[in-house]
Amino acid sequence: MFIKSIPDILFFILNLVMVLKKYKRIRELREDADLTQKKVGEAINLPQRTYAYYESGQRMIPPEVLCALADFYGVSVDYLLERTDSLKPYP
Image (tube, rainbow, N blue to C red; front, side, top):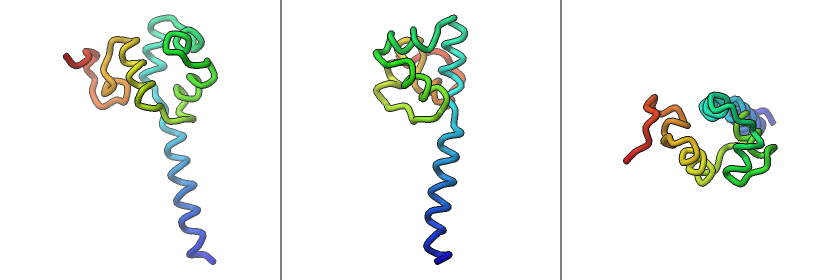
């Protein structure tokens, strides 16, 4: 029975780590632009609640939403995901 519960424990830990991953750059960009979650959501065609879930890390951001956010802020997706510190989007 203990062996059967190890995958459950690992699944729980993996989900916990994923939930704790916050997309701090999208929040920083939004706050620097003095925008509300609702305004950004409207700009990229998302409800405020959905955008809030993405920003807080409660849901993973789909690739098409990452692209929309990168276009909206004029940065690269890599910048949003903290893979680079360069604000410039790729040519």
